[in-house]
Image 1 (cartoon, rainbow, N blue to C red):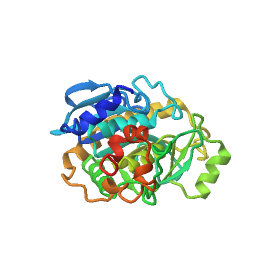
Image 2 (image 1 turned 45 degrees about the vertical axis):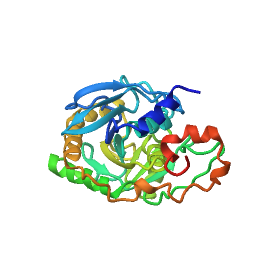
Image 3 (image 1 turned 90 degrees about the horizontal axis):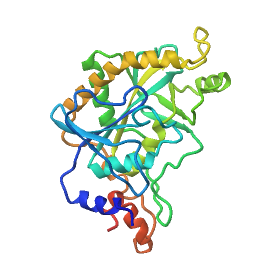
Length: 301
C-alpha cells in the first residue's frame, strides 16, 4: 500500500494544515507575503503533485500554495497531474481553492492586463482524466455552475479593492495545448461567444467539485489570441511581458481575497457528493474506499 494512504487517514484526524488553497499558473510560481512557510511534500493515491505545497499564513489565515506547472515551469498543461494536485489540497484540509491563470482574450473589450472572473467553462480537452471516480465506484456531480459564486464574488471584490480592472462572469474555453489556437479555431471560439481561452482550469474545476472544494479563477488576460487584426499571432515574448506586469496585481488581489474571506461557506460546494455517488456502498471495492478516503470518507467509510 502506498505511504500516502496512511497519511490521508492521519490528516483527517488532525487540524487542517490550510484552509485556503492557491494554485499559481504561468508567471506565478510563488506567493509573496506568505509567512512562516514550510514545504509539504505528499504522495497521493494518484501520484505526486506538480510540486511541494508551500504552507504558511497570509493575512492571518492558513494557506497552501502550489505551482501548477512546477517551479521552473516544467509541465505542459497535458502533463500536469491534476488529480494529485487537487487531492493534495484536500489532504491539507483546504476547503476553498483560488486558481490564478494566464488566458487569451476573445473579445475586443477584454484587454490585455485586465482580469476576468469566469463563471462558465467549455471543455475542448481530449487527453486528460478529469474525475477521481471509476475502478469500482461511480459518481455524477452537478456541474451546471462550475465555479463557486461566493468565492467568485470575493475575488471580484478583491480586484476592486486592489484597483485592478476586472470583468465578472464569462466563459473560459479550455483547449488541450500546448500549441496556441489556429486562426480558424479562434474565429469559431468567437462565434460561440466565449470570452477567454486557456489550457488548464476546466480540469481543475471538475476535480474540485468532486472533492467538494469551492473553486474560482482569477484569469489574467495576456493577449488577444490570434484573431485580432492588430495582433496577428500570439507570441511567448508578449505573454511573458504581460505576465510579469500582472504578477504584482495578482498577488494584491489574492491578499485582499484572503483577508476578506468569510468564515462560513454559503454555497453547496461542500455537499456536491451528497447525492452523487450511485454505486451501492456495499459493492465499492476496498481499494476504492482507501484510494478516495479523503473525498468519500464522510459518505462511505
